[in-house]
Each structure stands twice: as structure tokens, then as C-alpha cells.
Image (cartoon, rainbow, N blue to C red; front, side, top):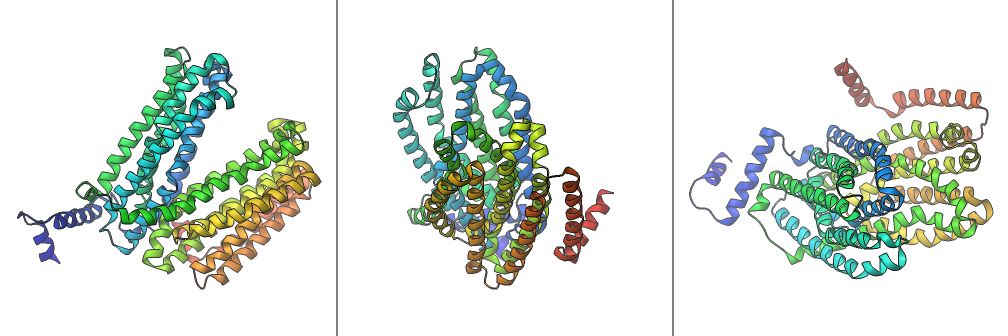
Length: 536
């Protein structure tokens, strides 16, 4: 091995393939020396997954605190109309990431899979092919949007006449930025495959803060004009892309010498990405379509008493979504390397996510009336408490189901989730129609939670197809989940504040003992003791 390495490093002229191989060898040596990128065996360690999940949570939360401070300032300076258009711009920038047609996930999956197998020969071609295809798709979407923008601004969006011209200019700028946004998503997919969430959040946190801070001085300098604000946001995106590209070149240096486009890689990319796209389109639709049903069957004012607790409940998803982003490449790597490793990740992820989410859900359900009364007043508390309780149950179930979701996608079966969503959509619409007529907004919340519950149960059952022998563990997890749901039902039946408080603390104490002695094993307890000792 040493002789081979020395030969590879010899100053003599070598072939292109040997140069590429030398780049990969240097990368491995650099990883050992600096820790800039971990060996595939380390990508699925429990410590790595926990660390990356915490980084993702910080990356999601930090910009929100800045937004709480800066949004009132922007509303005051811009006025309601311009600020409303700016929020549309933010939404469009975020929604443009869907126009990668699932290629981000496909790229992460295929690169992580090759890392697990320690087959890095075509990683460079895979990355460049993906980025080229994503760029082409971005240009096509941008062209279509540019053609349709005048009709959209003039006829669809209700925009004051005085603001239509600057709105159109701003939206043209946004359309031109689509390829940039999609390339950014692709580069993030590469970093995800290598589990470099430290670098991802090194860009995500400043970029998230920049979005909410950068418009303020521009508003003052350009007398509230909208398109300069959008231009500054796009400039920030460009800087982020350049930084991400530099990071990718550092983590995967051999892509600089192995630039190539391979048509044979397009099919697996589009095949995987197509199913992801189906889920990406249908899943948000099922999350928000209930509001349109309520508006049609009850009234527009009823939507407020439904949407507000819905928004509050779904904010709890930031935690499982942060974990999901880490689990997906970990599952992709582990399935290619050792299926037993995937089983361990699945088991531990379910365990820790349940331990974190159950107390949060129980607290919210128990004191939902008091929380709504304090936050929004007595009218909202009376009309929205039942909705919030049902919503939190659905959020809890869906949070736990993120683990089998990630596992199925990491195992290369996004088609299962997409087909499930295709079947669910018409059935859910029928259920919504019936339950809203029977129970109003509470009926809509029940239908919403029933859909998430059925969805979670089915994906758990499908896990057996990709993890043989997991059935006993799944049955055990489902029985624990049933106990949690029973606790939610019991606390929902209590109205007296002191009874609710006593029940809550009794359940939490019992839960803590159950977790410590039943759910946690010796390794978990040792890890906690070591963490406490290090903290002290």
C-alpha cells in the first residue's frame, strides 16, 4: 500500500485517471489530518447525527429571532402594501427551491450511497451532471415565469396601481434568480451527502439573518422602492452560492479535475427526483387545503380561528424537520454500507425524537386554553382550543413519522411515499368535506389529524419492506405511541386548571421514570452521565 501510494505521488507524468485517484487519496489524508470531512463510517455515528441535528435547529431558529425584531420596522417603513409584496418575494424565493424537481434529494442520496460503498469514481460526474440539469430546468422555469408575469401582476394579484410597475420589475428579478436558487439547493445537497451541516449552517444562519436585515437600509436609501430591496436579496443569494461552491471544492477537491457531463446518470437522478417532486407538491397541498374548504363551507372569518392554532401547532415541526435533514443522508450511507447500521439509526432516532416531542405536545394540549387566552384573548380561546388540541396530536404523530419517511427515502424508495400521497389526496378531500359539515372547524382539525395518523401508520408498516426483521421493534414503538395518545385524550377531558396541572406533572414524572428505566439502555444512561460530568 505504501509503495502504491508513493508511486501515485511520484513527480513523473501520470494519466488523467491517476491524477483523479491521487486527488481522492489526498482528500482522504486531509480528512484524517484536519477533520474537514469524515470517513463514510463516521457519517452515521450517533454523536455525528446528534451534533448535526443541533446545528440544523440553530440554523432554523436563529433567523426567526431576528425577524421578530426587524419585521415591525420594515412594516413601519414600507407600509402594508409594499411589505405584503415583499413577503410574496420571500415566499417565491423559498418556493423556487421546489423547482429543482427533487434533484437535490436525488444528488444527496446517490452521493451518500457511493460514500457508503466507498465507490467515489463517478461522484464528480454525478455532481456536475446534476448541477447542469438543475441549471437547465431553472432556466426553463425562469423563462416560463417571465412570460407569465405581466398577466400574473395585472390580473391575478391584487396590487395597488401605483405599485404594479415596481412589483413587476421586482418579480422579473426574482424570475432571473431561479437558476441561482436551484444551484444553491444542489450545492447544499452535496454538503448534506458529506454530512457537513456545520458548513451548511455556516451559510444558512447569516443568509437567514441577511434576508431580514438587508432590506432596512435599502428602504431608507431608495425611498421604499421595492425592486432595489429584491435586488439586494438576490445579491445575498449569489454570495451564498459562491461560498457554497468554494466549500464543495474544498470538501470534494477532485471535482475540479474531473469536470464532466454523463447522460447515463440523468435517468437515475430524474427517476428518484420525480417521486420526491410528487411528494413535495402534494404534501404542502394537503397541509393547507383545509383552509379553502373552511372558507367555502363555513366562512372566511372561520378560517382565522382555524389557521391561527394551525400555524402555532405546525411551528413544532421545526425540530423533526431539522433532524430529518440529517437522517436522510445518514440512512442513504448506512444502507449502502451496513443495513444493521440503518436499523440502529432508525431505532435511536425514534427513541430520542419521541422523548423530546412527547413532553412538548403534552404541555401544549394540557394548557391550550390558557395559552390561547393569554396570547389572543377569550374569543380565540373558546373557538380555537379544540382545534389546537387536535392539531398538536397530528403534529406529534407526523413528527415521529419523519423517521420512517427519511428511512424510506434513504433506502431509495421515495415512490412509496409519493404513491401514498397520491392515494391520500382525494380521500382526504372527501373526509374534509364530510367532517367540516358535521363539526365545523373542529371537524376539519379531526380530519387533518386522522390523515396524518393514517399516513404515519402506513409508512411504519412499509419500513418492514426495507428493514427485514424490524417488525418486533415497530410493534413495540407503536404500543408506546398508543400510550402517549391515551395521555393526550385523558388530559383533553380535564377542564379545571388545578386538575390539569396535577395530571400533567404526574404524567411527566411517570414518563421520566419510564424513559430512564424502560426506553433508555445502558449506553444511553452512560452517555447522559458523561454529558453531565463534562458540563460540571
